[in-house]
Image (cartoon, rainbow, N blue to C red; front, side):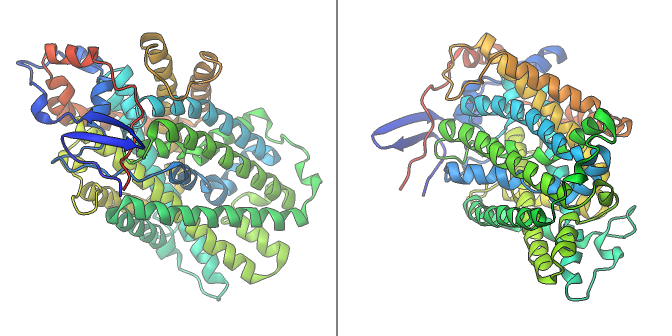
Length: 525
């Protein structure tokens, strides 16, 4: 079993051993006075310090390195695959018409441009903080906090948004037996119900699994991902038997603006490919495996999304999707007239949603662990259980908040708000790549963004374009979210920041120190 503890941690593979000193609070000399506001907002966290702290939690207990490239890929695929197809396809087709598959391609291209930037940064800074840590290393504490707060929106809120869709498929499953959950128990307020109990139940189950251990959760997720891919391919096989090429005419009934609007919405479907980057401190060989997992997951997810979208439109005219819930199940029912097929697909869809909830909730807890380590959020989120090797207390807090949100807030508002927060975080990662290429060309990179600087620049512009296509209400929600985040930073984060507490001499010393250029590996037994 891979192990990681306190003090000097040795990672070995074969005959190669790398010693990485873990920075503890005793090694950080507090400054006599904190820097001014502007200086603190611009103070960057040294990459060497991030790498040396990797795996440590509050109290000295460390995370366990147990993930290989298969688990990392399945984390990203599990967090991504299914969201747009299973949950918001019915809401997106009326925006784009038959060209919904083009919207998936556009959103996938935007995600891919950012994915290659994530791959470079994940190999260079293999820590649990994902884009929050990348922003801290390149743009300073102020932008890092904004990015981290956007990640809370991306991960925690997207978990709730995906879980909301569970009620639809639970009802489709029960309908085979002539039963149905009343709206009061399967829909949130605003959608005709009181509480979405299936959504809350899935979040609670995922929380329990994550508290028990990351390795166990990863194996369960891998099994569910295989089932999820299988049911989507099964849908395509059935839908293509009812394929009608005439359903694609006219291709653009809502014009290019409709395709762009749908692309902005279905970008929500690609949220999660970056989940593997939050496992940087639990990967056996993160510098090698994280870039591979991120890029491989993008290829798998985009291919399946386009295939399913084409099959669905081919089977039913685009106007049929307006107001349709659990669209894929209904297509199967109307095509085969076999209730058992719809039953199998509905059960698989519930498992697919559970997989997304499990992996995205995992990512959220690791983001908060990194922010807690830096002192920007309370220490409880950074406490790692000595028994399970997981941030158990933080997981329970996040799981409770997400379960309540999933049970009480409608899907539409959640999906759009999540997309804008995600796009902003992705744009920052592209900027981080440009910054480090210009200012730290000496750093050894296990993966390099192709066609630099065109790729990260296009990634940034694509994210900005998709953000601009989101509605005014979404921007209002995003602005309100940012104001809440700023208030929390000034109320807690600024006073407790550990990077701001460094003396000027200590900070300069850490900044000048180059991080280890050897790949971090786990000691296997």
